[in-house]
Structure formats: C-alpha cells, structure tokens
Image (tube, rainbow, N blue to C red; front, top):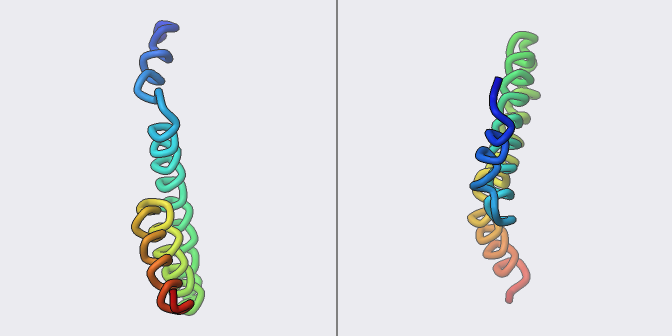
Length: 86
C-alpha cells in the first residue's frame, strides 16, 4: 500500500496550467493511438481497405493536432494567409 503523500508527490510537477495541458495531451494522444490501432485492425481483418485508408488519413491529421498543436496552428495560419491574400 502506498502512503497517502505519494499522490501529492505524483501531482507535484503539475504546478502550472501549461504542464497540466501537456500531460493531458500526452494521455489523450496515447488513448487516441490505441483506439485507432484497434479500429484499423478491425478494418484490416474485414478487408475494408477504403475505410482503413480514410481512417489513416484522419489519424494523421488529428494526431498532428494532438501531438504538435503549435506547428499545425502555424501551418494552417500560413495556408489561410495565402488563400485569403493577407
């Protein structure tokens, strides 16, 4: 049995909102990857190739948003500036 202060030690590094956001993104990102792997395996076993490819493309886009939000924001801002002529 762990002592009660062990929980305080685990939460000690999460003192700011930025660190908490990063921690949540890591947890959500890993859950997302596991979910996609299960779905992709199901599509592969059923030989639903089109749905598997679509899932892969969507996974790359959503994964980039989860794991590299600043880079995606910069990329989409640059694309919008070119489209809008700003």
